[in-house]
Image (cartoon, rainbow, N blue to C red):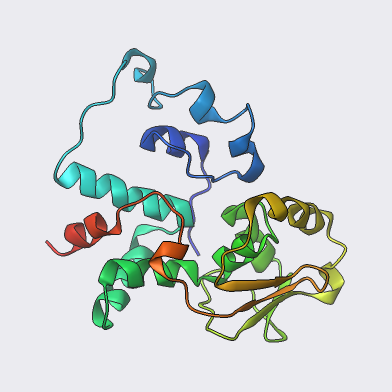
Length: 211
């Protein structure tokens, strides 16, 4: 499946905010947004202030933020929107719910990985199981009641263990239950909008796709 493999710090700089694409690095003094808080490119440093974005530009920027936070490309993102639009409920909130229920995002939320890109790699490499069955598809949508576990052969993986040490500071969303000792977690309920702590206005994304 296609994915963005270019430098990701410039994506945060383009949006003018931390999207937490590199895990703990985003919280350190090495964060590119803190060190170079201007848009990337040859003339980025010369732009003292960011141009005010309105209308279509504002909607586009919100869409780009969501795509970059979850690591989803345009075609797949549009499919999530179409799926959300067909469901009963608030389309924007349903869209975020689908993105949150992706297996790679759940692995990140549980603290098994320091970033969604690392979580995606763990899933692709077969380190995770869902209800006891190995799943290596990052976009796999989990459901309420599903149990996500680290495979027995991967329980000594130093990257997974070090990430779990950091989860205490990050915290686990209330819609998930983490068994740190057992290296497993469960979906106890579907995520609500107030439990999805990402700095975006999903209504602008809905407006963009509804034109």
